[in-house]
Amino acid sequence: MLTDEELQQYQRDGYVTPKFCLDDGMLDEIRKAHQRLVDRHPEFNDYCSALLAYDPWFLEVARHPEILDMVQQVIGNDFALWNSSFFAKPAKVGTRTPWHQDGEYWPIKPLATCTVWIAIDASTTENGCLRVIPRSHRSRTLAKHQRSEDKNIALNLELDKSEFDESQAVDIELKPGEVSLHDVYLFHGSEANESNHSRRGMTLRYMPTSSVFCHDAAESSDAKGRLGLGNRTIYLMRGTDQSERNDFRMRY
Image (cartoon, rainbow, N blue to C red):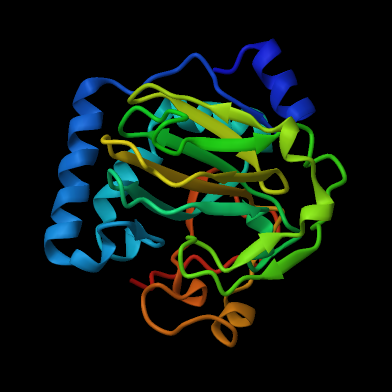
């Protein structure tokens, strides 16, 4: 469970790094599952945006009771998992993730998600750890983004530089198994990995079921196939569907 101080930090700053760590056994299983994925699909060596479409084993991580307890404290008793991704920044070749807000990409109304970011390797300033702008979530709005043609970045939408002061950035360094939680509106990004050490991270995306994942809206605007947002399976984790409009049918 998050302490009172940790919960207050999440609400105040938009993120928290709780005193929690996955055990070595679970970490080893995650690493093995990721290697299975890459062996079958080498194209995901750097990034897989939809883990559960390719290996439902990753639900074992998403259903970890202590992770669910922390998420419940942040977004309430009724919530669903709508996605899980793997970000693998190989040594020397891991690309930069530009400053952005997650909600710029996602078909969720009203927009709401708590992301749990799990360090599979040590995540440091040298190998491109997550960076955040504390309190940038507090307006509860999406800031101006620009489309980028830079081939050396991981995402194609980047926050306009007029929207934030990078000198306020905080590096989130984590040991293997440690986690951070962050809000859907938080400004964040990461530098390229120019070190000799890989930086693998796994994300779990949870939304309160008072929000709706709009599959139909996503189908018309995203790539077809398993990776398209319109093809995500939504998994109820705790409670009930408060909106009564979420579609929990299995897709992949």
